Image (cartoon, rainbow, N blue to C red):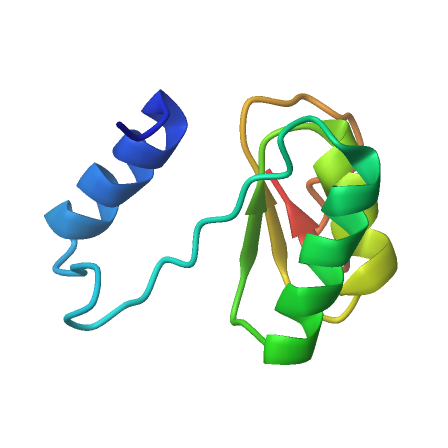
Amino acid sequence: MRPPVLEALVDGLREHGWEDWRNVVLDVRYADLDPARLLELAAELGAFKVDVIMVSDTHALDAARRKAAKIPIVMTGMALPGWNNPRRTVRG
């Protein structure tokens, strides 16, 4: 079973014509609340040069910014004033 935020993303993408494994690939990864694992996962995504990284907490955001700084990051379920700036790679 997918978390609600992921289910909402998949539904929204589908509404706009995007379907997993047809014209978009969603590579979902979990750190199981292990901060060190977050850094490993972020480094892997940076090495794969994915198009975008979606994070749902500040620890994952920090890991993605440290290990995959050039890749756009989309935040969900967080309110961080000042981060939603067009000059940054982080968007909410």
